[in-house]
Image (cartoon, rainbow, N blue to C red; front, side, top):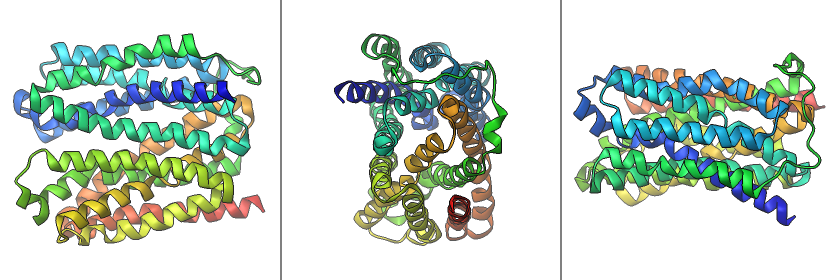
Length: 390
């Protein structure tokens, strides 16, 4: 048990340092746009470059984690994430260089998140796996939120280059931690094939879980993409006349999703995966449907609702990923999780655009319900999963 805990802690720390890189550009985006003279489209291209690199590499990363030691995949992935990001802080001076370096970080960060889930699931039996993966995935949320906080403070104190560097250097310590403090599980099974195994795509329970995760991400990343713009436009935040406070609230909201992940994983070990997933999606559907109407709330109330929103948005995430590890063969867990991640992150390209279209036509009151629609489709996918399990 002590070794399992060490594996979970070390792997979670590895993810935390790597995720700081993922979102540090977003935290200092206005400063980079001003210095480089980027248009909105160009700024979006630099942001999307990391996502694109991640999507290109995620399935190969999962296959490698099935075939070889996930520890080594994580070690290489974290190092490769850090180096281009440090180069971004040092030499990036415009669209082309910035896009290329963010793309490289995205390629390598794919070697951290999903292989880490594979590694943790190797060490924990199903009876406690939801709790373990919930804590691991919570680290992704904490890293995302703290990236905004750390980078905002560093950029305010010095400049955006220091902010990017300070949130990148930690990933260089991942390789020695993973290779020196952990080992592969004695019960680990490896894939006998060297490539992608299509058998996972014939598993209907798995496909239902992928659908749930995809609609979860539709809602989650739609919120994260537009939340700062919404808060900045509300009377309560306008009255504060603070350029920092809205970003700190967004960071805190994302960090609170870590609480939601941990709680969802813990709850799913006790009451069941589908039940926990349904509860989370049901609560987030209600909040997403109504959140655009809450802009007139007083500051304290708006912040409280925003933080609660962060919790419920993540309740279903860890149970869904845990479910994937349980409905596919052990030797294909990395591949299955990587395909799930590919499908899930693909929807994040579309939902912010749909939100924006609705925003142009009917304001935030019409835009947030487009995210609720995704959560509702996730609930329907839960129904399909329950039907398949009968």
